[in-house]
Amino acid sequence: MHEWALAEAIISAAVEAAEKEKLKTVTEIKIGIGELQQIEQDIFEFALGEIIKSHGNKLKNVKISIETERSILKCKSCEHTWNFGDAKKKLDDDEAEDIHFIPEVVFVHTRCPKCGSPDFEITTGRGISIISIKGKK
Ligand SMILES: [Zn+2]
Image (tube, rainbow, N blue to C red; front, top):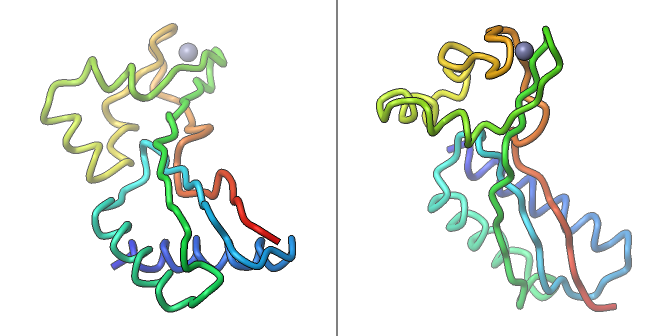
């Protein structure tokens, strides 16, 4: 059910931002989902639709666009950065599947491509964010 909580959080943040900018209607909300965010996108989009309906006129004609944000990993030993998508291609299918369901597994399967260290952090592409909001005053 966390898709519903995330959708609710996104919509209330968007409405808050629209009110701050004194927008009468919101026409577009662009949402970024990190590659490492665990989410059922179908459920998320359905939840967004339902929550938008409950907000009446302000969000009546809003267009939602969702982009996938690439996840960037950074080695803590040599500071090399690399993209999660590239690292994922090197994994076999079972491992890639594990990562889809449990992002923490990335820490088990991935090594720094430069120095081989297993000690790295995820710098971007984890979680959900609002990239931009468009509206009319
Ligand atoms: Zn390294």
